[in-house]
Image 1 (cartoon, rainbow, N blue to C red):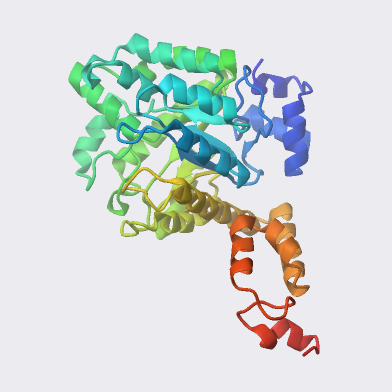
Image 2 (image 1 turned 180 degrees about the horizontal axis):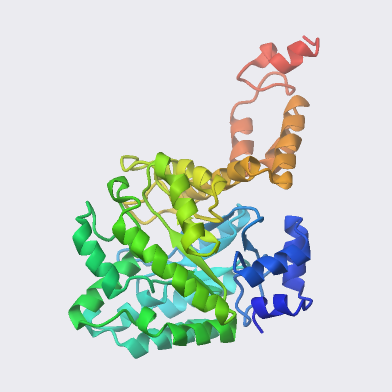
Length: 421
C-alpha cells in the first residue's frame, strides 16, 4: 500500500506520525496533502529510514545533496565521506548521480550508509550498459528502474517530459545553450538516433506500476531546464512543464507520489513567475529546483548564486532545493565543496521558511538572538547550520575576555548597553 493509499484510508503509520510531529503539522493535514498530491514522502517500502521527510505544501523547505562518481573520478570512499558529512550537517535527501564504473557497488554502499531518502537517475545506468547512446534498449531502461526499485531507492528522476514534440519546440527556440540536463541530453540523442518516442514517456504506465509496487516517489525531471538566464522561462521549458503536469495527474490517479523538477538558471525577476507556473500547470505538486542560479557569471561561487535564487524560489513556492556547490560547471565537488554547497542551501531554505511564517524556523532565530544577547557561545554553536565552523572561528580568534568576541572586544555594544565595562 502506498502512502497515498494509506492517507485515503486514514491508516496509522509511524513514518507519517514522525513527520507530523517533527513538522508540527496536524496528521490530518499531512494526509490531505498526500491525497491531493501537494505533499510527498519519499520512502521505498523495502527500506527503513532513520530520518524520513515530507516534501511539499505547508512543510519546511527541504534540501538535497548530490554525490556520485564520474569516469574521471572513481573513489567510493570519498563519496561516502561526502554522504556522511551531508547527513551530519542536516541534508534531507541524497541523490547518487554516479556515472563512473561499477554503479552497482557505489549504489550498494550509499544505500548501506544512508539514513535519509536516496534518489537516482535510472537512465544513467541504462546508458552505461550500452555501447553507445543509440543502442540503449527500451527494455534495459525498464529493467534498471525495476532493479533499483527492488534495491530500495526512494525516488527516481524520470525525464519523461522530453518528448518528440518537446524537441521540436527546442529546435525552434534557438537557445543560447540547448540542453544542460545530462539525462535530458541522453534521451534527446536517443530519440533522434532511433526516430522513436522517449521510452519514459511512451511506457510511463509501466514506470507507474513499478513505482506503485515499491511506493517510490517519481521526481519528474526537467530535461529542458535553462542552463543560461537568457533561456529562462522559454518555450521548451514551459512546454515540458505542461507535459509534466499531465504526467503528475496520471501518477496521482494511480496512487503514485510525484514531484516536479525545475530550473536551472533564472534571473531574480522571473523566479516568482516560474514558481507560480509550476503550481498552475502541475496541480500544486511539490517543486524541486536546482538553485535556481540568478546569474551565469558566478563560477567558483555558484553556491552563492544558487542560494540567492533558492531563498527567493522557496519563499514563492518551491518545496525542495537541490544544492549547488562552488565547483558547479567546473569540476566534481570535493568534500569542502559539499559542505559549502549544503550550508548555503540550508540557509536559503531556512530564510524562506522564515519569510513564509514557519513558527519553528522563527523560534530557532529567536533562540539564537537570545544566545547572542547573553554571549552564550555554546548555544550559538548548537543553533548554527555548521556548528563546527562556528566553533573553529571562535577558537582561532580568542578574545582576552571570554564574554565578548574579537570584533568589538571591550567596545561590545551589547555589554555597553548593559552598563558593563
